Image (cartoon, rainbow, N blue to C red; front, side, top):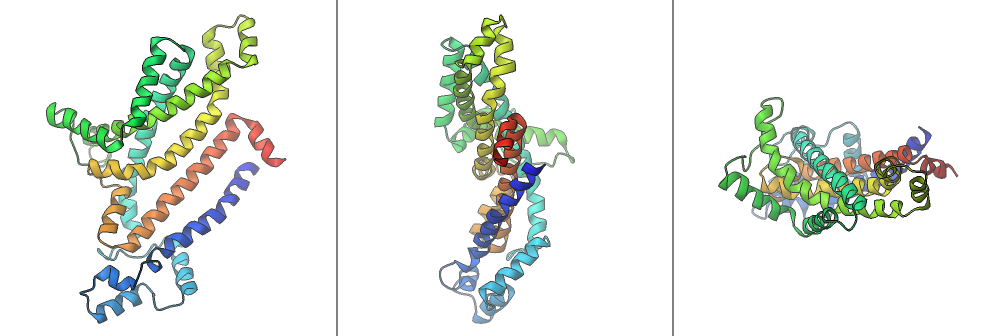
Length: 316
């Protein structure tokens, strides 16, 4: 618990810096932000109303404190396009992104664990060559290309799955699952490649360790040595890579949501930038960053669970 508390306290400076960066999005716009948002053809009266709406006439420090106070109360302002609370818009989009991210991570993790362990434990066999070849191919293939190939093959040619669209799970579970299969696998297959290589490399290093040779000399079977001893120690760098992957995955999902026309948080950011809806961009970026920070805290906590020496070392 003390390790978790210390780790949470370390996130406070990061959250402060993130809040400053998100707040500065509007103020860092070159020229007059009101003109950029409304366009040069807007009247001076409309521009002045926009400045008053965004408090742009107040001192910067006062603007920041007002904005930060609203964020702490859960008030991210109103959309400049729809005049709706940004927090409400984000809450509508967030489940789509979370479902896509969790599904993608589950698929990539399952493939990586199975392929990584088989590849390392059967080094030099056809299983190892196939796993390594697929991993190298997966790393080289972009998300959007694999997504488009999936759409052409499984949606257009075979007609097995929908090419786009989204239905909330609790309204139509079947339509929800069928709509998420292609985007989840298109992204998950790509993401599993790096994790497979990481786990294979880490497991091979453990299998060459003295304690593994000692375990074999005691007559333990290869399955017991690999699964009970080597895999556990190989998981620490694997968990590190998995945590970093989740952070990167949230950015990569923007592409997936655009290709499959999913109404998620990433697509909201893209649409809001195109519409110059900067208050929505502020709120969405802040939400994504907060999720990434929390995921990193969760990963650090998981380190301590897998290897207690990490939490003990942090006390030293």
